[in-house]
Length: 247
Image (cartoon, rainbow, N blue to C red; front, side):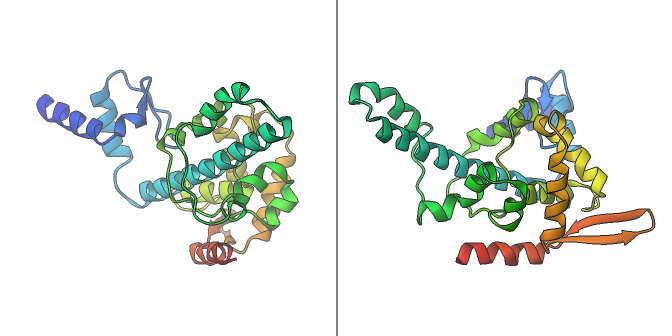
């Protein structure tokens, strides 16, 4: 039996799943379970995060998170280059700048930058009302940067506003729930549980959440016996996303 566990551990390590087990803690999105040894984590991974609708939904959300972070990296690199030109920095002073700009490797981006990055750029520069009207669904970038998966942990423990739109976060919250639905209060609690910023700043962000729920047709309010819950109309979301891609 122990030999089977060790064999499974080696196999899953070879596939890169060690990124899901850091400092004795499971880093699967929304999971903070701790384990003293890797075989126990492996058992937890196979039991609690096995292939299924919930795990697939979480994987898709994680993929979109990485795409958001890719977009943000492109925006910041362009900003860095613009600052360099504005300051007319001599070549010998820009060596370090080039090194930073090239890490972790050039992204190959197809299409104009403005088309690719509008989702991430607007999420950090515009207010809640404006975010609700545009820039809520980002355009995917061809490459995925696995190194940026840990970015979520950064925003979970640091008082920095996450670079994701409210609509994106609301959808993530709902799809991650077991029944693919949440009450408004459950959405609030998810925001606070997942991000330091929403736990320690004024609650004006709750107005933005309500605004986005009302604005976007992909969020559907369903009346139930225990009160209203919110669900996601994936067909409407994909249609909306397709419109953004074709603009």
